[in-house]
Image (cartoon, rainbow over all chains, first blue to last red; front, top):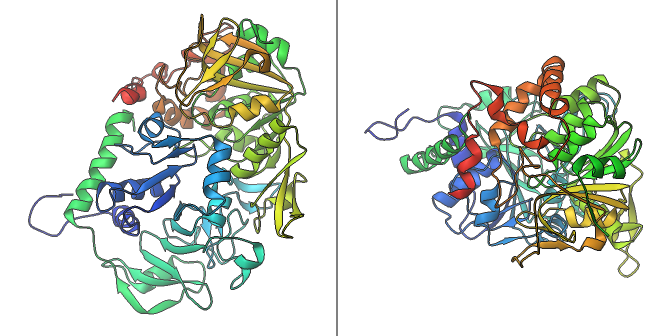
Length: 264
Length: 298
């Protein structure tokens, strides 16, 4: 996998997903970041085109500027580089709840066609699930109250389901009007960015439709890895592959984390 | 008024079988040494409360201390599942574990209500999620001023809250800084508290952003240097990220977990330094030598 050289840059599916997610963030936005893929993308944006992106982690670190990817939302480097460190009640009550934050960046174990997210249980019933997932964390209120939400998740039939087994965080509920009825103040999920392309809500139905694919990804491939009857936007776009500077910045971030974490 | 005692004495005097115990610390300042002391004292039937039951609660659940867990996110941060927690929920091993589950915002506000002496707190939350249907401690409430429908969450008032702090002074005043999480509210919401500290100094100097809990708000203070490990105490230690990664394999298997518990908790005896001995570097080849240790100095 070369970054220098004259040929087209080689990249993995995860890399183009992270680069695409990073590009969705604009400079000076305020962004509430979950750990994992969202944190990777937000830090890449800050390292490339959005140097004044404000990163907020639920540990209470506002304006964190980590020089490498933190393993957890509470790594010391986040507190040490933050503009302000506030308590946990404050981060939820004063910062998320009033809609002060532009983008909530979430992951998902399961997601449905209305962008509802499950991170609680899979299979069986709630009391006796087949798989017990970590649960809600900050996600329900991030999904409710951030001005917009972007979801980053690898696309497959286990994750992209017709109905989630449990609603942990609300997207568009059961369709148009749901968010208003539920009193959710933010606009809800505006993009699902995957390792195949990008899905966006249809303005009328609020169902997520395929609006962009990566080079060499076919529509039938995306449909195969989606558990609902995925519709395709009339003006389906092809997403630009990562440029060398983006890949170099991403790899610098991930190798910095490797260097600081030894065994990882 | 805070009494300064050994960790074993603090846990022995403050916590009893069947108690509701909150051991808080949001990634930073997690009271691991105190958790190990709870395991060593064979406390049983505890209702464990914690926003982020991570590795320390995985250990206590696997060791059979817990009857019920009240929480909002149960995972190994940045790594994945908590296997002892999952084994308890999915297979009732070593016994069944009752769950009461919330969102972070809900749990935080429940502690705020407890600390405020109020029966409940109000927030915009849970709406449209499946969470509210699973607990009686969340309900809708109409705003008496605007008529808007909001969410009420019941106060959390633990029998005992346990936290880890950087310092206390000789009088038992407690000071902590960095990511201060929910610890202040959790201590003030509880009837009794135990605070383990990195060091006891003659008197506290002022620090920007630090939380100070006056001695008269704290039950017991115990010296436990390194007592947050593998979590950390800003200014004293770095988060041992390698341990969190290593925990995945240790906790996956009941037998390997049992061996780990015998070697690193039961055999570690009481005393202030129990938390430190269970470091990832003891796990042998492939784990690395405390790779996280240099991070906060950079």
